[in-house]
Structure formats: C-alpha cells, structure tokens
Length: 179
Image 1 (cartoon, rainbow, N blue to C red):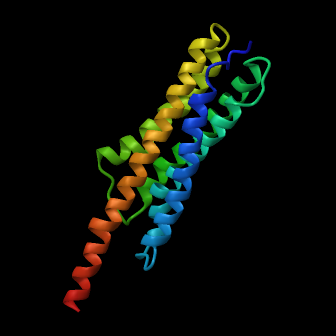
Image 2: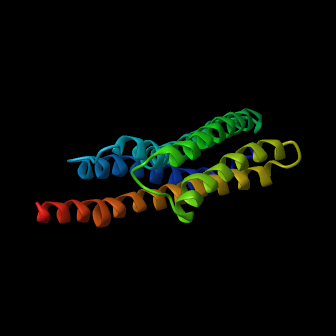
C-alpha cells in the first residue's frame, strides 16, 4: 500500500478537467483575437498565459500523483521543484501585471492572478516539507493547492473572456460607430 492509494479518482477528475480547460482556453483566445488591440501581447503574458500555466500545473501534478511511486519521496521532490519554479514565475507575473498598459488591475486581479497562485506554489513547497512528518496531511495540502490552481485558472479564464466580450469588443463597436 502506498500513500497515494485512494487519490487516483481525485487526480483523474482534476487532471482531466485541467486538460479540457487548457484546450478551451486556446479556443477562446483564438476567437477573441481576431483583431487584437495595441499592446495586447503584454496583457496576454500578464493575464492569459498564467491561466494556461495553472491548468498545465494541475495536469502535471495529477500525472505525477498517479505515477506508480513506491514512496512519497519522489513526489515530494516534484512538488518542491514545481513550487519553487511556479513561485518565481508568479513573481514575474506580478511584474508583468504592473508594467502592462492595456488594463489597470484591480484588487480581484491581484488576488486571482498573483496572490492566490503564489500561495498555491508556496503550499506545494510546504507540502513537501510536511511529508517528513505525515504523508496524509501532505497529500491533502497538494490536493488543496491543485484545486486552488484549477479554480483560479477557471476564474481568470472567465474574467479574461468577459473582459474581451463586454469591454474590449463593446469599446471597439463604439469607436466604429463614431467613425
């Protein structure tokens, strides 16, 4: 019996959801990118790309959790590496959110695009440390981080789509009416 027994269904559901949402995110971005605004690329790297990264992390963590490990040690190493890389990546997202000029982020944007992902990556590193004392708690922490990534990714993808549909496209139609 391994520490991962009983987690397969959780990660199959979460991982397949993340995989489907990655595909859906690409479809939506393709549909709304017919005529991108000036500097839209810098906003994309600050707001859209991180959502795809979060979904990919969920997919990766789900795959890693379903690998046939004999102990929790190799998975803890993966959590640590993913947590550190993701933490550094999210610091870059903070910077890109600050310097992009297409959109002025509000509190919800900072929370969902920067602070919650930062907390999730930190939780991965903490979960790896916790494996020294209890693998059961560590697995629940990784599960919580994974779900947080999934929910943040869903929120951010939805937020981006609604921005394009209700703000960007509406503004474009208004300017076309004036011309």
